[in-house]
Length: 275
Image 1 (cartoon, rainbow, N blue to C red):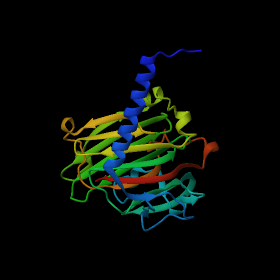
Image 2 (image 1 turned 90 degrees about the horizontal axis):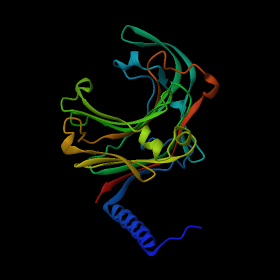
Image 3 (image 1 turned 45 degrees about the horizontal axis):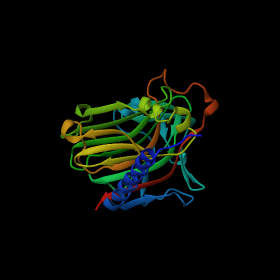
Image 4 (image 1 turned 60 degrees about the vertical axis):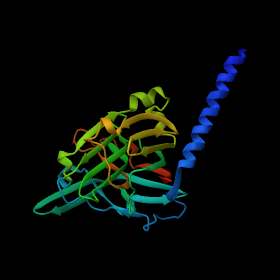
């Protein structure tokens, strides 16, 4: 049996008290401005745009999976973004024709959110080989390119990354990125690949004018300071996006269908704005 002295007990109480004070202060700073807990048996099209087809630009040649509305399924209070083997032939863009052998899904919030928000979603990730899921923000409302990846996952590498882009002219190819592989730190925090693909975790980003904080289940694992990252720091309003893609290179795409169809599952999403 461990015996704790008075100093240890006092220190523990102080830590718990400080955490409670921080949580209360954080709660007081924000108010809920957007929420979807997926209680309806269908996607709420007042809140979300459901994508279909492929983007009509260079990604037509880049994407391995075509987006289909039928792959967005809400069941028993859970949003399912389903990825599966699915043949769709002779998709045309300009004079180019493409065949697709996978389909998946993507939703984009119709509401855009300005800097000064906290965004969180409770998500369980897919595990099938070759998939690329993301919970991210994107916007070009004022002509600039803004992107903030709360997470991207690569099931082949069993990796989570966080990322941000910005370019004043709106050119993605010129946008400067601030990219970080976070799976090593998450692993040592107890969030192994096996855990995050078998449990729902709450992924949060706090996007402020001074810093961006990334958290999992309320535990911070990355902070980016605006003053040190001016060239890559997104500043304009962005929509929330939830999607899964198939990894772009032929050697990466799913070869073993035993885990397909697979799904990214979302229990809820909430957006808070600073008061």
